[in-house]
Length: 377
Image (tube, rainbow, N blue to C red):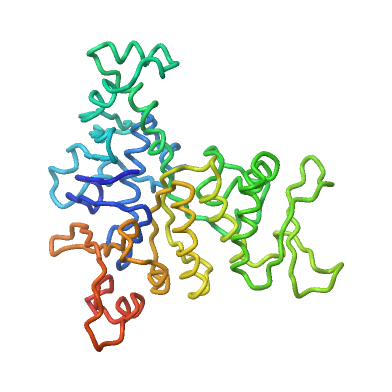
Protein backbone atom coordinates (compact mmCIF):
# COMPACT_ATOMS: atom_id res chain seq x y z
CA UNK A 1 0.00 0.00 0.00
CA UNK A 2 0.98 3.61 -0.55
CA UNK A 3 1.76 5.09 2.84
CA UNK A 4 2.66 8.68 2.08
CA UNK A 5 2.34 11.11 -0.82
CA UNK A 6 4.24 14.41 -1.08
CA UNK A 7 3.32 16.88 -3.84
CA UNK A 8 5.04 20.15 -4.76
CA UNK A 9 4.18 22.84 -7.30
CA UNK A 10 1.06 21.23 -8.78
CA UNK A 11 -1.94 23.48 -9.45
CA UNK A 12 -3.25 24.77 -6.08
CA UNK A 13 -0.74 22.61 -4.20
CA UNK A 14 2.43 24.46 -3.24
CA UNK A 15 3.65 21.73 -0.89
CA UNK A 16 1.56 18.98 0.69
CA UNK A 17 2.22 15.68 2.45
CA UNK A 18 -0.52 13.12 3.09
CA UNK A 19 -0.32 10.02 5.28
CA UNK A 20 -2.79 7.62 3.70
CA UNK A 21 -4.74 4.67 5.04
CA UNK A 22 -6.53 1.94 3.10
CA UNK A 23 -9.80 3.87 2.71
CA UNK A 24 -9.45 7.65 2.56
CA UNK A 25 -12.27 10.18 2.26
CA UNK A 26 -11.72 13.80 1.24
CA UNK A 27 -14.21 16.54 2.09
CA UNK A 28 -13.89 20.25 1.49
CA UNK A 29 -15.52 23.18 -0.22
CA UNK A 30 -15.63 23.47 -4.01
CA UNK A 31 -12.23 24.47 -5.38
CA UNK A 32 -10.31 23.49 -2.26
CA UNK A 33 -8.05 21.16 -4.25
CA UNK A 34 -9.47 17.67 -3.62
CA UNK A 35 -9.31 16.73 -7.29
CA UNK A 36 -5.89 18.36 -7.65
CA UNK A 37 -4.47 15.92 -5.10
CA UNK A 38 -5.94 13.00 -7.03
CA UNK A 39 -4.58 14.36 -10.31
CA UNK A 40 -1.09 14.79 -8.88
CA UNK A 41 -1.05 11.13 -7.79
CA UNK A 42 -2.31 10.13 -11.24
CA UNK A 43 0.48 12.22 -12.80
CA UNK A 44 3.00 10.30 -10.71
CA UNK A 45 1.49 7.03 -11.86
CA UNK A 46 1.65 8.11 -15.50
CA UNK A 47 5.25 9.22 -15.00
CA UNK A 48 6.05 5.74 -13.76
CA UNK A 49 5.05 4.40 -17.17
CA UNK A 50 6.66 7.37 -18.91
CA UNK A 51 3.34 8.13 -20.61
CA UNK A 52 2.78 11.82 -20.08
CA UNK A 53 1.04 12.72 -23.34
CA UNK A 54 -2.32 14.52 -23.06
CA UNK A 55 -4.37 11.62 -24.39
CA UNK A 56 -2.99 9.23 -21.78
CA UNK A 57 -3.41 11.74 -18.96
CA UNK A 58 -7.04 12.37 -19.91
CA UNK A 59 -7.84 8.67 -19.91
CA UNK A 60 -6.60 8.51 -16.29
CA UNK A 61 -8.97 11.26 -15.15
CA UNK A 62 -6.57 14.22 -15.28
CA UNK A 63 -8.07 17.46 -16.57
CA UNK A 64 -5.93 18.68 -19.46
CA UNK A 65 -4.63 22.24 -19.40
CA UNK A 66 -1.65 24.25 -20.58
CA UNK A 67 1.67 23.28 -18.94
CA UNK A 68 1.83 26.59 -17.07
CA UNK A 69 -1.57 25.89 -15.53
CA UNK A 70 -0.41 22.54 -14.21
CA UNK A 71 2.02 24.33 -11.89
CA UNK A 72 1.23 26.47 -8.89
CA UNK A 73 0.46 30.00 -10.01
CA UNK A 74 1.13 31.72 -6.70
CA UNK A 75 4.41 33.15 -8.04
CA UNK A 76 5.42 33.53 -11.68
CA UNK A 77 8.73 31.75 -11.09
CA UNK A 78 6.80 28.58 -10.22
CA UNK A 79 5.47 28.31 -13.79
CA UNK A 80 8.84 27.01 -15.00
CA UNK A 81 9.75 24.95 -11.96
CA UNK A 82 9.47 21.17 -11.85
CA UNK A 83 6.47 19.41 -10.39
CA UNK A 84 7.67 17.03 -7.68
CA UNK A 85 5.83 13.91 -6.60
CA UNK A 86 7.13 11.57 -3.94
CA UNK A 87 5.47 8.22 -3.23
CA UNK A 88 6.33 6.21 -0.13
CA UNK A 89 5.15 2.64 0.17
CA UNK A 90 5.05 0.31 3.12
CA UNK A 91 8.45 -1.44 3.50
CA UNK A 92 10.42 -3.11 2.01
CA UNK A 93 10.19 -1.08 -1.19
CA UNK A 94 10.07 2.36 0.38
CA UNK A 95 10.22 5.48 -1.75
CA UNK A 96 10.14 6.78 -5.31
CA UNK A 97 10.45 10.43 -6.33
CA UNK A 98 9.62 12.06 -9.67
CA UNK A 99 10.42 15.43 -11.16
CA UNK A 100 8.13 16.45 -14.04
CA UNK A 101 9.21 19.24 -16.32
CA UNK A 102 7.91 21.04 -19.39
CA UNK A 103 9.41 23.92 -21.38
CA UNK A 104 5.95 25.55 -21.75
CA UNK A 105 6.57 25.95 -25.49
CA UNK A 106 3.90 25.23 -28.11
CA UNK A 107 3.30 21.46 -28.39
CA UNK A 108 5.97 20.77 -25.80
CA UNK A 109 5.68 17.50 -23.88
CA UNK A 110 6.12 16.57 -20.28
CA UNK A 111 9.31 14.79 -19.34
CA UNK A 112 10.10 12.88 -16.19
CA UNK A 113 13.15 12.35 -14.08
CA UNK A 114 13.26 9.62 -11.46
CA UNK A 115 14.93 11.48 -8.65
CA UNK A 116 15.41 8.73 -6.08
CA UNK A 117 14.61 5.08 -5.48
CA UNK A 118 15.32 4.89 -1.80
CA UNK A 119 15.18 1.48 -0.23
CA UNK A 120 15.00 -0.58 -3.42
CA UNK A 121 18.63 -1.68 -3.46
CA UNK A 122 18.37 -3.04 0.06
CA UNK A 123 15.21 -4.94 -0.86
CA UNK A 124 16.88 -6.47 -3.89
CA UNK A 125 19.93 -7.51 -1.91
CA UNK A 126 17.68 -9.60 0.33
CA UNK A 127 16.05 -11.55 -2.53
CA UNK A 128 17.05 -15.17 -2.94
CA UNK A 129 18.24 -15.74 -6.53
CA UNK A 130 16.80 -19.25 -6.50
CA UNK A 131 13.33 -17.72 -6.33
CA UNK A 132 13.91 -15.44 -9.31
CA UNK A 133 12.89 -16.67 -12.76
CA UNK A 134 13.63 -13.49 -14.75
CA UNK A 135 17.33 -13.40 -15.83
CA UNK A 136 17.20 -9.62 -16.17
CA UNK A 137 16.38 -9.28 -12.47
CA UNK A 138 19.14 -11.70 -11.47
CA UNK A 139 21.57 -9.62 -13.53
CA UNK A 140 20.24 -6.47 -11.91
CA UNK A 141 20.61 -7.96 -8.44
CA UNK A 142 24.27 -8.70 -9.07
CA UNK A 143 24.96 -5.29 -10.64
CA UNK A 144 25.51 -2.09 -8.72
CA UNK A 145 23.78 -0.10 -11.48
CA UNK A 146 20.09 0.34 -10.73
CA UNK A 147 17.81 0.16 -13.74
CA UNK A 148 14.85 2.35 -12.90
CA UNK A 149 12.52 0.77 -15.43
CA UNK A 150 13.04 -2.76 -14.06
CA UNK A 151 12.50 -1.53 -10.52
CA UNK A 152 9.27 0.17 -11.44
CA UNK A 153 7.82 -2.67 -13.51
CA UNK A 154 8.65 -5.39 -10.99
CA UNK A 155 7.78 -3.66 -7.74
CA UNK A 156 5.38 -0.78 -8.44
CA UNK A 157 2.63 -2.53 -10.32
CA UNK A 158 0.04 -1.56 -7.73
CA UNK A 159 0.72 2.13 -8.25
CA UNK A 160 1.03 1.82 -12.05
CA UNK A 161 -2.70 1.67 -12.66
CA UNK A 162 -3.90 4.56 -10.49
CA UNK A 163 -7.02 6.06 -12.06
CA UNK A 164 -9.56 8.68 -11.02
CA UNK A 165 -12.97 7.12 -11.60
CA UNK A 166 -15.97 9.38 -12.17
CA UNK A 167 -18.63 6.99 -13.48
CA UNK A 168 -21.46 8.53 -15.49
CA UNK A 169 -24.97 7.22 -15.96
CA UNK A 170 -24.76 7.43 -19.76
CA UNK A 171 -21.69 5.20 -20.01
CA UNK A 172 -22.86 2.78 -17.32
CA UNK A 173 -25.94 2.02 -19.42
CA UNK A 174 -24.09 1.80 -22.74
CA UNK A 175 -22.45 -1.59 -22.41
CA UNK A 176 -21.15 -1.28 -25.98
CA UNK A 177 -18.57 1.36 -25.03
CA UNK A 178 -15.07 0.43 -23.95
CA UNK A 179 -12.12 2.59 -22.97
CA UNK A 180 -8.48 2.50 -23.99
CA UNK A 181 -7.87 1.85 -20.27
CA UNK A 182 -8.78 -1.73 -19.38
CA UNK A 183 -10.75 -3.25 -17.82
CA UNK A 184 -12.78 -0.24 -16.61
CA UNK A 185 -12.66 3.26 -18.04
CA UNK A 186 -12.91 6.26 -15.77
CA UNK A 187 -16.52 6.98 -16.81
CA UNK A 188 -17.72 3.39 -16.43
CA UNK A 189 -16.83 1.99 -19.85
CA UNK A 190 -16.11 -1.72 -20.05
CA UNK A 191 -18.41 -2.78 -17.21
CA UNK A 192 -20.29 -5.42 -19.20
CA UNK A 193 -17.11 -7.02 -20.50
CA UNK A 194 -15.65 -7.19 -17.00
CA UNK A 195 -18.68 -8.82 -15.37
CA UNK A 196 -18.93 -11.23 -18.32
CA UNK A 197 -15.31 -12.31 -17.78
CA UNK A 198 -15.89 -12.66 -14.05
CA UNK A 199 -18.99 -14.76 -14.70
CA UNK A 200 -16.96 -17.16 -16.85
CA UNK A 201 -13.52 -17.16 -15.24
CA UNK A 202 -14.08 -16.11 -11.60
CA UNK A 203 -17.65 -17.11 -10.71
CA UNK A 204 -16.98 -16.68 -7.00
CA UNK A 205 -16.27 -12.99 -7.58
CA UNK A 206 -19.34 -12.67 -9.81
CA UNK A 207 -21.49 -14.17 -7.05
CA UNK A 208 -19.94 -11.85 -4.49
CA UNK A 209 -20.93 -8.85 -6.61
CA UNK A 210 -24.51 -10.16 -6.73
CA UNK A 211 -24.54 -10.71 -2.98
CA UNK A 212 -23.40 -7.15 -2.25
CA UNK A 213 -26.07 -5.71 -4.54
CA UNK A 214 -28.64 -6.86 -1.96
CA UNK A 215 -28.15 -3.36 -0.53
CA UNK A 216 -31.00 -2.44 -2.88
CA UNK A 217 -34.30 -3.55 -1.39
CA UNK A 218 -36.06 -4.55 -4.62
CA UNK A 219 -33.06 -6.41 -6.04
CA UNK A 220 -33.28 -10.22 -6.22
CA UNK A 221 -30.54 -11.00 -8.71
CA UNK A 222 -29.07 -10.43 -12.14
CA UNK A 223 -27.65 -12.64 -14.83
CA UNK A 224 -26.04 -12.52 -18.25
CA UNK A 225 -28.40 -14.23 -20.74
CA UNK A 226 -27.03 -17.24 -22.59
CA UNK A 227 -28.80 -16.36 -25.85
CA UNK A 228 -27.10 -13.03 -26.55
CA UNK A 229 -26.14 -12.31 -30.14
CA UNK A 230 -22.43 -11.71 -30.83
CA UNK A 231 -22.74 -7.91 -30.69
CA UNK A 232 -25.41 -7.78 -27.98
CA UNK A 233 -24.53 -6.43 -24.54
CA UNK A 234 -27.28 -6.90 -21.97
CA UNK A 235 -27.95 -8.16 -18.45
CA UNK A 236 -31.21 -9.39 -16.93
CA UNK A 237 -32.07 -7.80 -13.59
CA UNK A 238 -34.76 -9.26 -11.35
CA UNK A 239 -37.12 -7.18 -9.20
CA UNK A 240 -38.47 -9.30 -6.34
CA UNK A 241 -41.75 -7.34 -6.23
CA UNK A 242 -42.75 -7.96 -9.83
CA UNK A 243 -44.89 -10.87 -11.01
CA UNK A 244 -43.11 -13.87 -12.50
CA UNK A 245 -42.69 -13.35 -16.21
CA UNK A 246 -42.51 -9.58 -15.76
CA UNK A 247 -39.80 -9.49 -13.13
CA UNK A 248 -36.79 -9.14 -15.45
CA UNK A 249 -35.56 -6.00 -17.19
CA UNK A 250 -32.23 -4.88 -18.65
CA UNK A 251 -29.77 -2.13 -17.71
CA UNK A 252 -31.58 0.45 -19.82
CA UNK A 253 -34.62 0.21 -17.55
CA UNK A 254 -32.70 0.07 -14.29
CA UNK A 255 -32.37 3.01 -11.95
CA UNK A 256 -28.96 4.66 -11.96
CA UNK A 257 -28.22 3.81 -8.32
CA UNK A 258 -28.12 0.11 -9.19
CA UNK A 259 -25.67 0.74 -12.03
CA UNK A 260 -23.34 2.76 -9.80
CA UNK A 261 -23.37 -0.01 -7.20
CA UNK A 262 -22.67 -2.62 -9.86
CA UNK A 263 -19.68 -0.56 -11.01
CA UNK A 264 -18.28 0.01 -7.51
CA UNK A 265 -18.62 -3.59 -6.38
CA UNK A 266 -17.03 -4.84 -9.61
CA UNK A 267 -14.17 -2.37 -9.14
CA UNK A 268 -13.47 -3.46 -5.56
CA UNK A 269 -14.00 -7.21 -5.95
CA UNK A 270 -12.32 -7.99 -9.27
CA UNK A 271 -8.70 -9.12 -9.44
CA UNK A 272 -8.40 -7.38 -12.83
CA UNK A 273 -8.98 -3.84 -11.54
CA UNK A 274 -6.28 -1.56 -10.03
CA UNK A 275 -5.05 -2.04 -6.50
CA UNK A 276 -4.92 1.71 -5.85
CA UNK A 277 -7.42 4.16 -7.32
CA UNK A 278 -9.66 7.15 -6.61
CA UNK A 279 -13.39 7.76 -6.93
CA UNK A 280 -14.49 11.36 -7.41
CA UNK A 281 -17.91 12.07 -5.85
CA UNK A 282 -18.62 8.61 -4.45
CA UNK A 283 -22.11 9.77 -3.41
CA UNK A 284 -23.31 10.39 -6.97
CA UNK A 285 -26.91 9.14 -7.45
CA UNK A 286 -27.01 7.75 -3.90
CA UNK A 287 -29.68 8.05 -1.23
CA UNK A 288 -27.89 9.38 1.89
CA UNK A 289 -28.43 6.21 3.95
CA UNK A 290 -27.37 4.05 1.02
CA UNK A 291 -24.22 6.15 0.57
CA UNK A 292 -23.30 5.61 4.22
CA UNK A 293 -23.81 1.85 4.05
CA UNK A 294 -21.99 1.67 0.71
CA UNK A 295 -18.84 3.13 2.28
CA UNK A 296 -19.01 0.51 5.04
CA UNK A 297 -19.24 -2.32 2.52
CA UNK A 298 -16.56 -0.91 0.25
CA UNK A 299 -14.24 -0.61 3.25
CA UNK A 300 -14.75 -4.27 4.06
CA UNK A 301 -14.22 -5.25 0.42
CA UNK A 302 -11.03 -3.14 0.25
CA UNK A 303 -9.62 -5.15 3.15
CA UNK A 304 -10.70 -8.49 1.71
CA UNK A 305 -9.32 -7.78 -1.78
CA UNK A 306 -6.28 -5.69 -0.84
CA UNK A 307 -7.48 -2.46 -2.47
CA UNK A 308 -6.59 1.09 -1.52
CA UNK A 309 -8.90 3.98 -2.41
CA UNK A 310 -9.28 7.74 -2.09
CA UNK A 311 -12.86 8.99 -2.29
CA UNK A 312 -14.17 12.54 -2.49
CA UNK A 313 -17.66 13.58 -1.40
CA UNK A 314 -19.90 16.52 -0.60
CA UNK A 315 -22.53 14.29 1.05
CA UNK A 316 -22.31 14.36 4.87
CA UNK A 317 -23.94 10.91 5.08
CA UNK A 318 -20.86 9.32 3.50
CA UNK A 319 -18.88 10.20 6.63
CA UNK A 320 -21.18 8.08 8.80
CA UNK A 321 -19.93 5.03 6.92
CA UNK A 322 -16.43 5.54 8.35
CA UNK A 323 -15.09 4.13 11.59
CA UNK A 324 -12.29 6.49 12.57
CA UNK A 325 -11.24 4.19 15.41
CA UNK A 326 -9.85 1.96 12.64
CA UNK A 327 -6.52 3.46 11.53
CA UNK A 328 -7.03 2.11 8.00
CA UNK A 329 -10.04 4.41 7.59
CA UNK A 330 -9.11 8.08 7.34
CA UNK A 331 -10.99 11.32 6.86
CA UNK A 332 -9.26 14.44 5.52
CA UNK A 333 -10.58 17.98 5.32
CA UNK A 334 -9.10 19.68 2.27
CA UNK A 335 -8.95 23.46 2.38
CA UNK A 336 -6.92 26.44 1.17
CA UNK A 337 -4.93 28.57 3.56
CA UNK A 338 -4.64 32.37 3.56
CA UNK A 339 -2.20 32.18 0.64
CA UNK A 340 -4.50 29.93 -1.37
CA UNK A 341 -2.36 26.82 -0.95
CA UNK A 342 -4.21 23.50 -0.68
CA UNK A 343 -3.79 21.88 2.72
CA UNK A 344 -5.09 18.66 4.28
CA UNK A 345 -6.11 18.06 7.88
CA UNK A 346 -6.73 14.52 9.09
CA UNK A 347 -9.76 14.17 11.38
CA UNK A 348 -9.14 11.54 14.04
CA UNK A 349 -11.49 9.81 16.45
CA UNK A 350 -12.19 11.71 19.65
CA UNK A 351 -13.98 9.89 22.48
CA UNK A 352 -17.33 11.38 23.51
CA UNK A 353 -17.10 13.07 26.94
CA UNK A 354 -18.90 11.16 29.66
CA UNK A 355 -22.54 12.10 29.98
CA UNK A 356 -22.81 13.59 26.48
CA UNK A 357 -24.56 12.17 23.43
CA UNK A 358 -22.18 11.26 20.58
CA UNK A 359 -22.47 13.49 17.51
CA UNK A 360 -22.33 11.69 14.18
CA UNK A 361 -19.65 12.77 11.72
CA UNK A 362 -22.32 13.95 9.30
CA UNK A 363 -23.69 16.29 11.97
CA UNK A 364 -20.20 17.50 12.87
CA UNK A 365 -19.62 18.29 9.20
CA UNK A 366 -22.91 20.16 8.78
CA UNK A 367 -22.40 22.15 11.99
CA UNK A 368 -18.91 23.18 10.90
CA UNK A 369 -17.16 21.42 13.78
CA UNK A 370 -14.61 19.69 11.55
CA UNK A 371 -14.33 22.24 8.73
CA UNK A 372 -14.88 21.62 5.04
CA UNK A 373 -17.61 24.27 4.64
CA UNK A 374 -17.37 27.70 2.99
CA UNK A 375 -16.48 30.54 5.36
CA UNK A 376 -17.21 33.52 3.13
CA UNK A 377 -20.99 33.49 3.67
